[in-house]
Image (tube, rainbow, N blue to C red; front, side):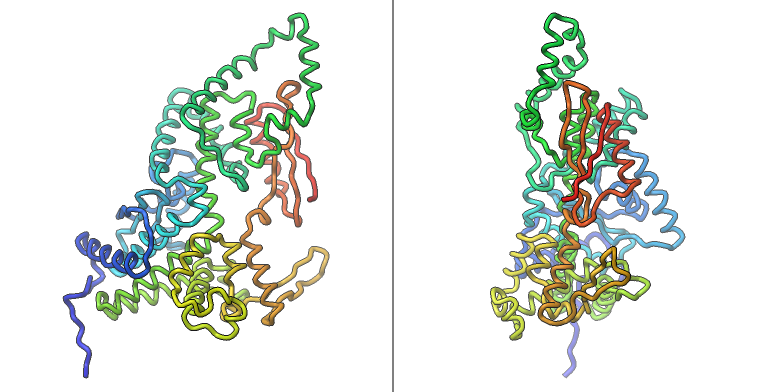
Amino acid sequence: MTAVLDRSKLLFETPEWDFSMLDRVYEACEDIALKDLKLDVYPNQIEIIASEQMLDAYSSHGLPLMYSHWSFGKHFARDEVMYRKGYQGLAYEIVINSSPCISYLMEENTAMMQTLVIAHAAFGHNHFFKNNYLFRQWTDAESILEYLAFAKAYLTRCEERYGYDAVEVTLDAAHALMDQGVFRYRRPPRPTRAQMDEKRRKRVAYDEESVNEIWRTLPGGGAKRAAIEEDDDAFVKAQLKLPEENILYFLEKHAPGLRPWQREVLRIVRTLAQYFYPQRQTKNMNEGCATFVHHHIMNALYDKGQINEGAMLEFMTSHTAVVFQPGYDDRRYYGMNPYALGFNMMSDIRRMSSEPTEEDRIWFPEIAGKGDWRDVLKDAWTNYRDESFIMQYLSPKVMRDMRLFALKDHESAEAYTVAGIHDESGYRKVRAALAAQYDLSAREPDLQVTAANLQGDRKLTLTQFVRSGVKLSASGQDDVMRHVRHLWGYDVELKEVTA
């Protein structure tokens, strides 16, 4: 017998697409995502944009309604030249962590590619954004679009009132300190409207008092100043909540010379830095989730007869390129491909849940043979970040398939040492070493405000805690100190402590 293709079921037959076809594709993907995979997503908003608009989105971190800054124009000019000369391509889509979840699709995409990126972004990334604990705790998808509109309008008013150059200088300093402008271990404060009004009133009062030097000439003024300077250091630190890891937050609240509009600029920049912080911790999981979802949906569409063999071959070509992992000795190697590692691990979780081996039962007794791989994956997508996900779920099979091994590189040694191979102890070493590469606290310099004299010489003390040799480079240290001095307005010293 010969199978006959029912063309009436096909979503499309040619690479060309129109908006009615996109509606059919979206509904078909949604049916599989919600009823089969049982994903939980924000409402979707699909936008079709041209290549120049995609380049513009690149330059402004992919955010709509972004405020203006010279660095965005620089990135746009560079990417445009590279794209026009054929040295780099463009993303097929960009997705925004917001509600509604906005997915930008390239108008140059084929019908198959539009289907793939709808499955990838509108359902894979969307589900991850809505459900992962880091995004739920640290970002507010409901308000980010409104906040971006406020930030853009506010900075435009500042430029008109205080001058373009003044705003640019403050933004330059704030952007340079974005990596030191996030709360890593505690939730960012979210004050109520009444609390914000009270803080604003106190800030104005403080600004007035800080420039009033008349009290120094009054009787008893010198004694009062001496008493202040002799305040218990522990009490001062408690009042300022030191040490403080979020340098931008500290400068916003306590820098003596900043004007109210400058403090608001720092707040805008650190809010955006905090918005992106969960994405930096979940790149592997986020892309792995979206890739796994689009792979499942595209295969389901083919099984249901909604896309034909030609579309499936085009999909397989694109998907294979996305999850390709060059070897360490390949000229194309640039590190671990998050699409490859995430997709391989999630596919392996599905395998272990349905068809476990004896090795799987030993290493993963809690999920081996569980049966419903959807629940296992959704639990992982919800409760883990890259580091913990790898430590929990990276299996010996994936390590063998990807030919992973661990190297030890000690600065005093003349050569590398192979620390982990494909045996029981080696698997654990490889897993631990790979997980450590995704631990931001171990890879990024630890810089904190540890002291500030607000009543005397107003000297600010930063302390760099060096762990495993991780610290600012010489040029990075100079840049950080220059920008902190500019925002603080007084002397700043940097101490170094080996932790």
